[in-house]
Length: 427
Ligand code: GDP
Ligand code: IMO
Ligand code: MG
Image 1 (cartoon, rainbow, N blue to C red):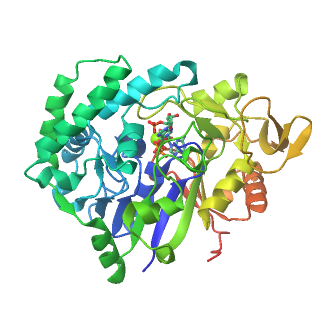
Image 2 (image 1 turned 30 degrees about the vertical axis):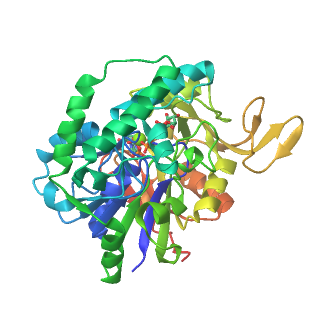
Image 3 (image 1 turned 120 degrees about the horizontal axis):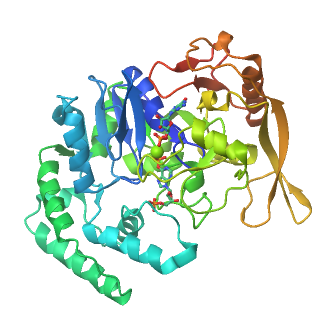
């Protein structure tokens, strides 16, 4: 078997959590491959919304094994809080959740460093979620990090103190201090909680699953435009959010990747700083924000909103080798007389039809206008019933991007999901 991958094509929050939860019944295993508690993956069933940060979004489906892969970074405090929430609903969690021994630990001082670096950057700050993501991956790459497997070793406390000391020296040079003793106490309680789970060599376990014909869905966090290499650097996260990240974050060979599900909102959002060519500052933007309830699932910050950006979408499709598109939040576009899609950018009088190295500054998106629709589509369940204008919008995107739209999501709930009967596999 090959592993399928689901990942975001924009600046995160595309609806990955909801769609992973919807797709999980078709899979034996769901595995998160990168990111950490900077992610907030929402899913809703029986009209109750759940937000996951470190735990894969297949956890509410009884028969699925959920794996936190080696590419993920874990904060034991946030992990424990999540477990306490989920445990009430998922009795089987200790059997169904496996954690890679090679996943890295976010220390309390990583969070402090995140805050110190952001403060130092002033106006140029990234707009980090302040969960310690950047400093943790920095330590991983510079070979100073602590891994989940270390918590089982006799000298764990020594290793912890040595890294903490290193961090404290940096924090001192930034003149940054905060009392984190309470957090540290909870952190060590969280470590004990983690010990209750199966800590595994996830690369062996996942490859073994594939070998035995079990189906695996790899769940990405963030989105392609936040990728450390391909996103709008430096306003990005610190991991590879793209499909290749599923290989390094789980230990799956490239030849073992099957379908690549690329998920995008019917418009664009971004939370935090950084360039966003199609961002709206008018009533249309306000409407998208209001109707889409665009507030961050992790930080509660309002998300910036704008029209769909085709060049960005094509770029993401290219980098990831997307085989199927999934469009979410189509319902939020109801009520617009016209819907705009940026097909190119104009910069210094020149027209560009690609995602530019530098999308900052006076870059003007060039728009195609398509007719909108008024119908409330949140109760529609058949593709045929969708408004013609929405079907035209979908066709336009498919033609431009050259990948078929497989699923259209019309609301946050599990059942608000429509499969496109016109979809034919490109694989
Ligand atoms: P993720 O990080 O990609 O999992 O996405 P988030 O959970 O951060 O943000 C997506 C938000 O949109 C959540 O509040 C979801 O409940 C909600 N959502 C997902 N799909 C739809 C949809 O099709 N329509 C509407 N209106 N909301 C959706
Ligand atoms: P999900 O998985 C949206 C953004 C932050 C900030 C930048 C760097 O829910 O889609 P970091 O904390 O990683 O150092 O922040 O990336 N960011 C996200 N934006 N969705 C996310 O995750 C995000 N994770 C990080 O807002 O701009
Ligand atoms: Mg999110």
